[in-house]
Image (cartoon, rainbow, N blue to C red):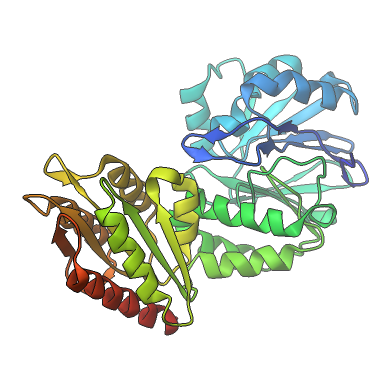
Amino acid sequence: MNTVLTDNVFWVGYIDWPVRDFHGYKTVRGSTYNAYLVVDEKTALIDAVKAPYAAELLAQIQARVPLEKVDYVVCNHAEPDHSGGLPAVMRACPNATLLCNAKCKDALARHFDTRGWKIQVVADTEKLSLGRRTLQFFDTPMVHWPESMVTYLVEEGILFSMDAFGQHYASGFRFDDESDMCEVMQEAKTYYANIVLPYGRPVAATLARLGGLTLKMVAPSHGVIWRSHFGRILAAYQEWMVCKPARKVVVAYCSMWGSTRAMAEAVAAGAQALPVEVKLINVDATHDTQIVTEVMDCAAFAAGSATLNMGIMPRMAATLTYLRGLKPQGKAGFAFGSHGWAAKGSEEAARYLDAMQMKPVREPLACRFAPDAEVLEACRAAGRALAEVAQRA
C-alpha cells in the first residue's frame, strides 16, 4: 500500500474495514481515520485516530521516526473519531506540543484530561516553520463543528482538509487515482448528505476563502486523498452546497396494510409519465443514510404515511426527523397516506415538510382505508405535478 504523499510526508492512519455505523450513519463500505506525518527539521503529526486504534497509529509513526522526535501534533477537529487517540499520542510523544485553535483547546479539555499536555494555540492564517516546510492554519468554523480548522503545507501545496471532501470509504488504496471513482464519488455524496448538508453556507465561505491556495493535493480525514481528481469533487461540492436540484422525484412511504403503498406506487407512476428520474422508497426497508442521499439532490419529494395511534408511523417520523435536521433546501413536495377514522399520518407528515420549507404542490392527499380509482388518479396527478417541478430543475 502506497502511503507516501510526497517526500517525507506520509499517511499514518487506520483503515476501519468492519465499521458499519457512524452515530446513525450507515457506513456500508467502512471508513478510514486519516492521520499524516510531516518529517522535516521538526516533525509534525496532523490529526489522530479513534481511541481504539491509537496503538496502530503510534506504530506507524515509529516506523518513520522515534516517538520522542515528534515535535508537534496538530488537532484540526475535536470530534472523537479524530481526537480520540490524542491522550495515547501525547503520552507516547513526550516532546510534542499540541497545536489547535482556541475553541478546539476548550473542546479537547471537555473531552479529555489535558492538564499535562503542552498546548499552543494557533491563530487563523498563522504560519509555523518546520524547517524547509511551513504549516499554515485556517479556521473553518461550522465545517462542521465550531472549532474546525484546516492545515496547509505551503511548499508542497497539500491541504489537510479535515472532514471536507471526505468519504467513509475503507480501501487498500490511499489515493483517488488508484480507486474506483464511481464508488468514491458515491461515498463522497453520501458523506456530504449525511454530515455536511446543513452547513452549506459555511462550506461556501470556506471554499471561497481557500480558493487562492495552490492545491496539488487535498488530504481529508476520511477516505481517499485527492491528487488527480480534485476538480471533480470540488465541482460536486459547489452543486451540493446549494442543493442544486436534479431532475429527480423521490417518493418515500411507510405503509401498514398496503393502502399507503398503493398510493405511493400511483404517485411514482404519475411522475414516471414525464422524462424525470423517479425513486420509490419504502422507508421500512431502507436506511435513512440512503434516503437522505437521494433526497439531497431531488427537485421534488413526497412523503406517505399511514396513521398509527392518531399519528405518523414511527419509522416515517424517524426518517423525517433526520431529514429535517439536515435541512435540505429548494424542494417542492406534498404528504399523503391512508387512514382509518382520522387522517393524522398524512397531516403530521405535511407538518414535517412545512418545517423543511418545502414548497407544497398540493394539500395533503388522504384516503380512508384502501384507495379507490378516484384516489389513485389523484395520486397519479400529484406525481405528475412533482415531475413537472423536476422538469424545470
